[in-house]
Image (cartoon, rainbow over all chains, first blue to last red; front, side):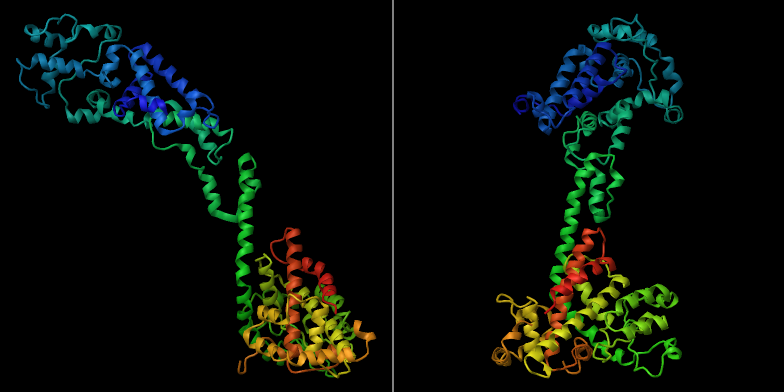
Length: 520
Length: 77
């Protein structure tokens, strides 16, 4: 940064001079060579922005330092270029006959009238020689066909071919038609564009830009980017403000916006992508994990109105026409497992499809129901209709199954809470239903055992409490009420709160009873 | 709460009654349902873990089947 403070930065002057110096068509070969060498050196210096351990390189990264370096370079270029080239900032102007015309004008000003634009014919007649002859009285050297105001500068121009014969006027119409002639006057204007760096970069770096475009999605510190950086810095070295390295490649941002749908294989070609991936993955998973956790409490509340409808539907077990002819009259009313499904708005597309293909479901269903009751299994296999399973407990009491909608809702809520947002597939729902059937079966057994043990004919809350204790659901840290508060809606909470005074009483009973069977 | 049931209490009662061949007291089914919710929570949590392990995006029948036995064993009284 010391260089920055040291060097006055002629920001307006330098770019033009630099551009002029680096132009391949520069008038003097020395100037061009110097400029090119400078450019090359700079490109080398700036090639590795990441590893700027060396003295001057370390400063090159910052915009100020770059500006300072540019100033130095331009100064050096100015030193290396001949005097005259330095004085005239723009090469086109140097090539153009502007000075020539200026001098001519100076000479002719006394003798001639101001030239009107329309009179192109008359102006072309005034060749340099003629002009020189005209200006004999004022200027000294008309012989060369040029007018020189400064004899010392002539050395450089001697090498060149003679400049195009100037037109002293600008016929606007002609200029539009053939740019080659008319553009002589417009060159200064173009040079302004050249200072804009864009043309310069276009001229110099087209092939490299192709490469840079290919590496568009690379990330910051990559080794491959070094080339890209170098070109970019060189291209924009005049442009102090924006360092391209500050911005991540466009592709990265897009992907970040796109979110989770990124495929790893898609970008395997670039090593950086692999680095980017895990971060995004983690973020996604975090999201997925965080969001549902907040909803756990809500879900139990939301669940309530939906569930409420189900018993009405279970009341009307047989809905479709198929089972009616097949359903034997001797059996008790069949409980439709999926009777709830038909009313609910949830995705039931697959469920009707089961009617069409009874075979696989039949086998599966028999496999499940076997554990519960042989009768129902035989029933389902005979009828081939999986959804019309009759469930009869081992006590010979047939029972309904839980409404599938409620089970699905519960399962979905809990799955969300544990970080999986996807819908529960019908297959999974069937398995869950089966699991809950089994659960209720074993729960009924256990509760009956507890009640028997307590010498009761009815199952009451204490039995359930005991069961939950034995299930390790209730422990000194987790009370029944905390669980109820967490999972049950408020209306049901009140009912849970009712029994506590009774509970200690009933606890004592089993203690007072047979001590041996406490374990059950 | 008037006329509103938050889950099919009658259904739950019927199920438990059928399996235990016992009657239930008035509010026992609430706790039973609470227990069922806990079971479902356990089941789905483990199924979700299993699904994640298997690289599935949602809970599938396979993952649930795998964890059903464990969950049931955990909830054996």
